[in-house]
Every structure is written in structure tokens, then in C-alpha cells.
Image (cartoon, rainbow, N blue to C red):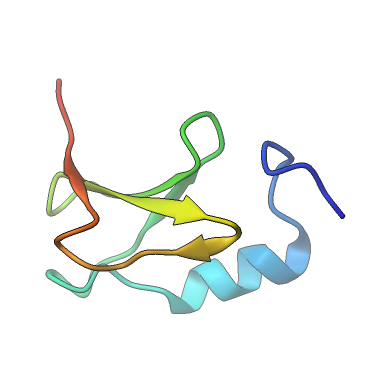
Length: 65
């Protein structure tokens, strides 16, 4: 099993292309350092826990400058 800090595999990158921000329906960026999916448009970060992205506003955090 891959370490959670490893860069996403090609399969994971393809899956990331299909995931969108639930608020804006815009693209998400993977941040390996924080293990989050970032929505620049919504200014939110969605955590990834045990390999599962939590794409709810309740689980998200506001990005800081």
C-alpha cells in the first residue's frame, strides 16, 4: 500500500479529473503536503481521510492567504 504522502498514481489523477467542488462545480487541485483537495474558486480545502475525499462543506476548511 502506498504512503498517503506519495504523489497520486495515474489512476488517482484520472479520478481527480472527475471530482469537482460541490459548491462551485469547478476543478480541484491535490495538495500532497496537507492531504487535501483544493478549490481555488470556493477558497476551500477538502480533507482526504484514509484515501477518501470528504467533499462536504462541513468537512472543508477555509483557505488562508
